[in-house]
Image: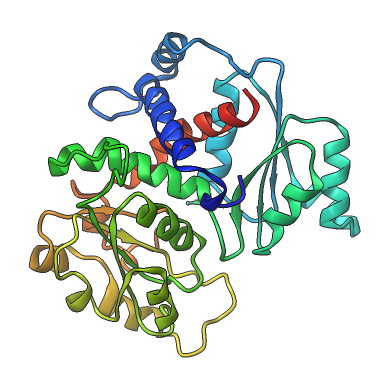
Amino acid sequence: LVTVGDLSDAAIAALLRRASEHADGLLASDGKTLASGAAGEGGSRLGTKPLAGRSVVLLFFEDSTRTRASFDLAAARLGAHVVNLDVDRSSVSKGESLADTLLTLDAMRPDAVVMRHRWSGAARFASRHLRAAFVNAGAGTRSHPTQALLDALTIRRVAAPRLDMTLDSDTQPFAGLRVAIVGDIRRSRVARSNIALLTRLGAELTLIGPPAFLPQRFGLLGVRVAHSLEDGLRPAPQVVYALRVQREREPTPGAPSVEAYAERFCITEAALDRWCPEALVMHPGPVNRGVDVSVEVLTGPRSLVLDQVAHGVAMRMAILESLVG
Ligand code: CP
């Protein structure tokens, strides 16, 4: 799995269905995560340990909390043996290339390799060097397909019931859903994968950000482009998806200062109340509090941020199962 484009419509539908079953097993009906014993009970309802005897290598060349921990938990809950390679203490520090690292690990015959890398082409490159199944856990600024899939799962399972929407038709299942993606879109692999998946599912997308973070060429992707919250949040979206200003990546020429960005684009209660009072708020994390989203919104009832995290485990279980089960 390198990009959302690698998946057929039927495969996406099957992943959403299976991940939803896993989420039923992992999550209480009130949406709160159950204690480990109860999660085990959910697992047993689904038939435990479908990946027993299988092995999964996690290979993270870039930092991660959510994706790495959730793949680790997902593989463990399915019964797989997980090798979580510490790249900083691997032979990469002696100059071993990406290709040689991949070939070496593949020679140990893992069933799957899950990789994150700062180079946008790394995921496709890796998939061509491995016999093992490959999962892209984030490649440069280009793609983060498992994030988009878990976001779609969260929209279907958590947002839709709260918005009183039904998003489960076979064709164009998200028809009628308006999503505004706000922030540093130019450098965001999350935005690219979400644009690909949500438009395919039939959602209407508006991208919002200052011109330096949102070049006009994004309009070619069949989405609306706006350079202010006022323009972008009308008509009102049901979901506002905020992105992190990615200060760790190469600087964007003409980008506003963090303070200037926050002044105009931070998702606050006041902005939501004014333009889209019913909207729910998502963010892939980690959040720059008070820059991407206000603390009040992040910790308030509109926020689906921890629902996204919880559904990440379920979606990654479904992905691993579909590739190596
Ligand atoms: N959303 C996401 O990819 O978060 P991490 O960088 O913590 O994995």
